[in-house]
Image (tube, rainbow, N blue to C red; front, side, top):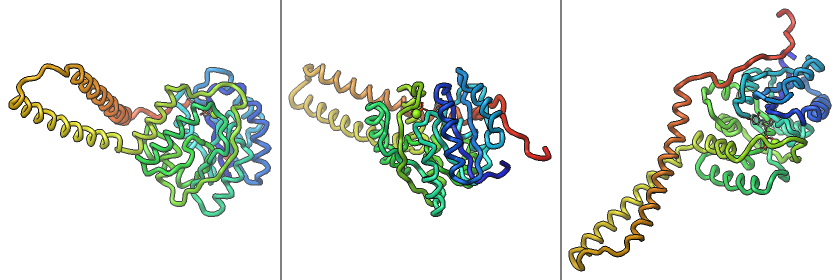
Length: 315
Ligand code: UDP
Ligand code: MG
């Protein structure tokens, strides 16, 4: 297992219901590929029995299994980051633990890499999630497409393959809150995408409630583009020009027609609109300042409690 051809990285957060089925399908699928491989599970601070199940699996297949145990929940992308730091494969594939990304599809990604691509993204053929997730992610996909330089047909699909050099570049960044598929895209020389099947979650619940999804999308947008801030200054310029014109009109009107006291609520309405835009702007600024704040503290990106792995010969 010293330098396998393939590393498969799987973040795990409270997945005790799905892990047995995952183990049962993943290993045969990887054996069928006919390449040397390692599976790297990262337990992202699960509060259920996931860690114990992962340990059992490590004991059952220590030759090809490694387990990183986090101290606490640091999020899916930090779990993958830890996997990237510790994997040894020439090619690296990421996969969800809930069997929504069928492990049998890994071969498709590797075939695209054989053709010289250094980064292969998945596109979910038919997406098996709640309808509101479809709508929200289509909107976000479109927004991201406009304001970042990142081209991804399906940003939410985590079944992806990365070459060793891209993984190295990602690990070398010091970003604390990031979106790995987008970061990888910025380092890729020949990215491509392939269509993969998608299944319903095998068991358990989605680990992404609405709030976490919104946070994730902020990471994606503010982490890769200044466009929101810049658009905001454009809106500001437009509004100041409009109000300057309005003030000039009122001044002239006052000289010609005389003072006016009507239209109070119109004015209030306009005022509230402006206040709303202002608050949104401050919040947006906060998103960027918050990222800077996290970055300057230079805390470790994640804290590892233990790593289960077989010692190499001679250690
Ligand atoms: N996950 C994680 N940490 C988190 C949230 C999720 O490691 O804080 C893992 C989770 O165990 C799964 C993958 O990330 O393997 C995707 O999560 P999920 O299937 O809940 O997301 P969805 O498919 O609903 O987008
Ligand atoms: Mg899922």
